[in-house]
Image (cartoon, rainbow, N blue to C red; front, side):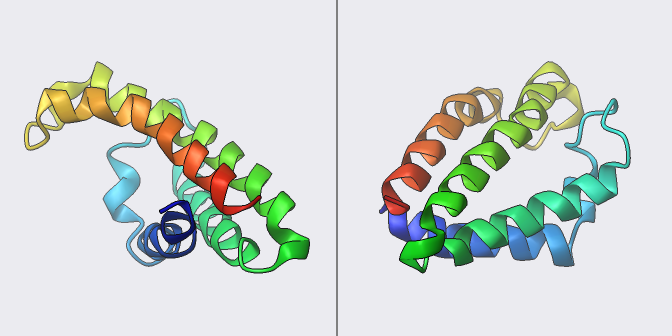
Length: 114
């Protein structure tokens, strides 16, 4: 499961960050400078993590990049929860669920890049 998430899931989210960055504009906290650039960089980091997980020599670097990326996007999830009124289509329970899911994603990345 960790391998599928790391290789396929991150490539999908990377593509969304890079090809449709406007999806992430509203969930990026207001205090983030150069928000669109940060969105592109997080997409690039997700792609690099997914591709880095493919080869044994790059897996350790991919592991730490992926974990850093998951930690780096965590404030967006907190921001969404703090400003739930901006996201009326997302149930409040789902906003709460996103927080511990970051830990699950970190574990999946760790497992896939051992």
